[in-house]
Length: 102
Image (cartoon, rainbow, N blue to C red):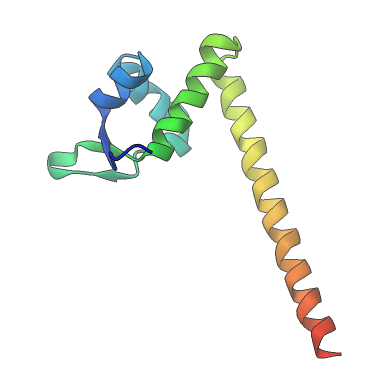
């Protein structure tokens, strides 16, 4: 397991082999890629999960041949699916609670 907790943009850039300006562009275009937090002086700080998201976007763009609009559409759809699943889960929890009362 990796011991590093937070990465600066330069470290993410080196890890993924992508220039920092490309990472900043992706952040601007794909809202969920925003850094988890900012350090002193507003420096971007990323978690391992953030780095994994960037790696997925890189794969989609560079290996799968998607365009940035396709990546944005994909994640909007995934976000909607996540919300639908969460809503269904809440309904099932409420139904279970009602059944337990009977």
